[in-house]
Amino acid sequence: MLKFTDEHEWLKIEGDVATVGITAHAAEQLGDLVFVELPEAGTSLDKGATAATVESVKAASDVYCPLDGEIIESNQAIVDDPSLVNSDPQGAGWFFKLKLADPSAANALLDEAAYKELIA
Image (spheres, rainbow, N blue to C red):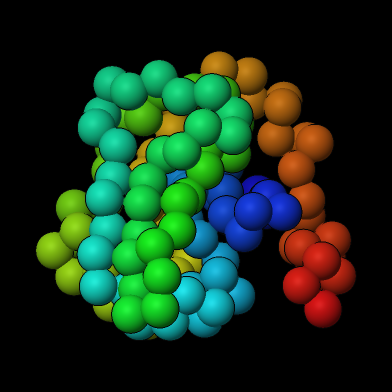
């Protein structure tokens, strides 16, 4: 199940784990990424907390935690090669995996149609 936030994060939810990244729209708006800082595994974050930082040739931006949970894995590949986020934002360019405190909270997030309407 894919869900989206109005802060331009996407979540692929499998059971109680969400793989989180930024949308293609967000990656396009940021431009070419040159730096990514990700959270450490074991970090507990609340919804809306800053989870990661990205820097592009244009600006630095925060990536927010879309739901309450604990980071269980970060994608070292995008730290080593930030351009993966630009080339495959909703695939190889994922940011982190989050063990959700309450998986049902994802029901309040946007579905793909609602997100497309948001960015239209």
